[in-house]
Image (cartoon, rainbow, N blue to C red; front, top):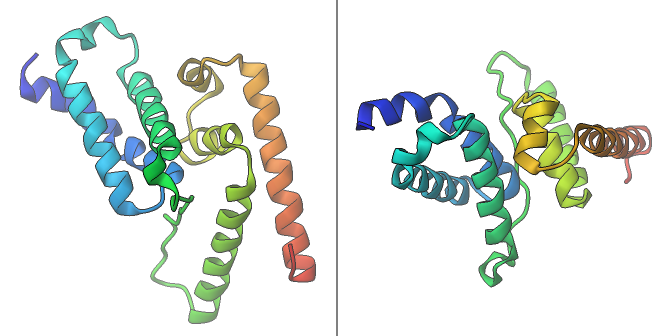
Length: 169
């Protein structure tokens, strides 16, 4: 496989790899490092890529495993979820403060979710993968994924509603 063939396969989903890494790791820099590692691993496996039915799903699984390993390592004592891809330049200052506050609350609430629920929410709600693809990536059946996603959304909704209603968690 040539470099241009490799790039034509990998480039369309490299941003998804980055966003999943960013969801699981602390910072943009950590996510960039993880993305670079995943792309390097894919490059080293480029000759075997034709054997994979879905290279994108394979790379997302690699990303998830790599980030979870990194989180489990001793060096990861200070890692947490950080996510904020929403940006609209035509919003008033007050509205922007409210949006940032809501995103901060969502991030804080998501930090409290079990690891599996965080990953499933990222893959389904942010990356827009369908349940079949998530099932292959996480090696789980679709029903378990739907239940986990439902529980995560319910927890998020309840805590966010409580926060907005009472100003507390």
